[in-house]
Length: 142
Image (cartoon, rainbow, N blue to C red; front, side):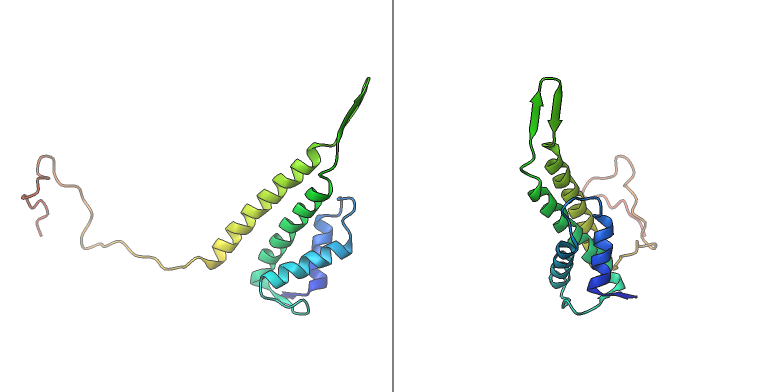
């Protein structure tokens, strides 16, 4: 299965649909940047094994973009009424950091070697008997 840049843009828009000011042009730019960061041209289709990685990268960048755009939010108190929007940017920064750790885990998972070394069954690793672990004493007897 392959997805085009437009299909990835639609997915990103669905994931950030409740964010005010996040439009299709923003999502399209972020998806194109994510594709280029993973060696895809914007007109290419992304292979199925890289879709999650490209989407996570785009989501990280989107969360940072939103965090920067709401960084000017404020806290205001007037008598009984108070408005506190100062934590919105902090929440988006936390989301971006969580997404970044997910991205790093996914990247490591994809690039992890599947090389394994089996344990030796002909020589079990046992500890020497008590009192016989001195240097000159051969405690393993084959």
